[in-house]
Length: 212
Image (cartoon, rainbow, N blue to C red; front, side):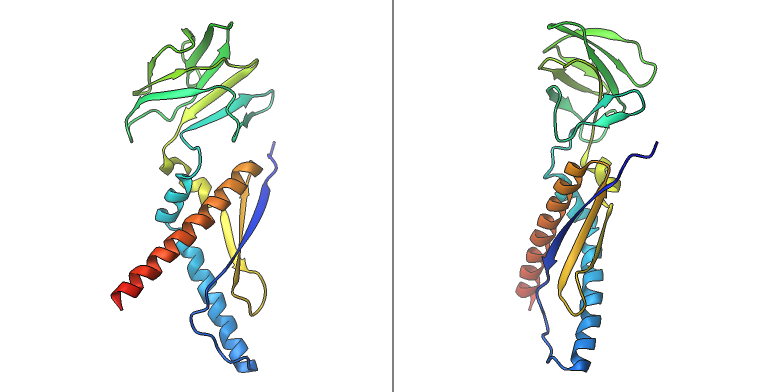
């Protein structure tokens, strides 16, 4: 089974640095200039600094999934239940999955990984697992769910799933297309990347102006 892919687009107008006279030769020269610049700005967008800052704009710390007959479905941006992180090392914590299912209004079952031992816990009880402490504070709805904890770095590969291109010939408009299995994540990630790119570009321009 191959899940469907969803694409979303955004556009940015790049500031013209060196306007040219609109002659045939000038248009050709400007066209090459736009092509090169859009390619260069695409590299900036794919930079680790821009992507990590963009990921930081999202609710990335916990990923929720609901198990189905064929596959698990990511619930982003919805949170089927609330997880409160009490203590977490910035790097050394488990990225493994936890499977949970409600037992009654007060208890739920949880096990780690694929073959972990299923245990019962109370809602609001501190769980010391995976080199961190957390608790589930709201009831788990009917069904079987999994969740895992993330760092910003864990989303880097997924966040690079976009392309930049020219919106048209002889234009300084860059089109950014992001593709993902989750259409809401695609839209949120694209918006975050574009905002962080604009912020980064403005910061670099101010830095360049101070140096001249």
